[in-house]
Amino acid sequence: MKKLMTSATVLAIVGCFACFTETASAQNNAPSKTSSVVHKVGLIDMAHVFKNYEKFTALREELKTEIQQSDAKAKAMAEQIQAVQKEMQDFKQGSPEYLAREKQLAQAASDFEAFRKVAQRDFLRKESRIYHTIYMEVTETVQKYAKIYNYTLIMRFNRESLDTDDPKKLIQGMNRQVVFHRADDDITLSVLDYLNRNYKSQAGAAGGSATRPTPGKTRQ
Image (cartoon, rainbow, N blue to C red; front, side, top):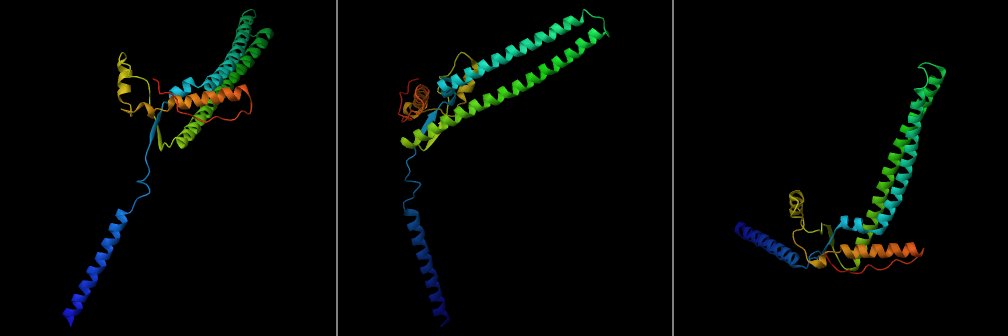
C-alpha cells in the first residue's frame, strides 16, 4: 500500500513537472512584442545644426547688438570716472572742491560696478535662454522627424571628417562613439533644412503653417 501511494505521488509530481515544462516552453516560443519592433537608428550633429540654423544666428546677432550698446554705455561711464579723477588733480587734497570730486568719483565707480555686474548677469541669462530655445526646437523637430520616418533612436555624433593636421583634434576624432554609419542614417541636414524653412516662413508671414520635415540630401 505504501509503495502504491509512493508511486502515485511520484507520478503526480512528474505530471505537474511536465505541465510546467510545456507551459514554460509555450511562453518562450510565444512571439514577443518587443522583438517584433524593427529598430532604426538615426544620427544628428547638433553642433552643425546650431551653427547653421538661421534663427540661432539671428538671436545671437540681436544679443551681440545689445552687448555692444551696453559696452558703449560702460565706456562712457568709465570716461566720466577718468574725467573726475583728472579734475581732482587740479585741487588740493582735503579742499572742499577735492572732497566734492572724491564723493562724485566714489558714486560714479559704484554705479559703474553695479551696471557691469547687472549687465553681465543679464546677458548670460539671455544667452542661456537662446540656447535653451534652439535646443528645444531642434529636439522637437527630431522627434517629429523620427515619428514620421519610423526612427526608434536618434544619437548625437560629429559629422566632420577627421583633422589629420592637428594631432589633438585627430585624437578627439578617433574617440568618437560612432565609428561607422550609412549616409542615410545622418538626418542632420534634413532637420536643419526643415528648421530654416520653417523659420523663414514664420519670419516672412506670421501665422504660416508649419511644413512637414522631409529627408534631405546627406551631403558631407
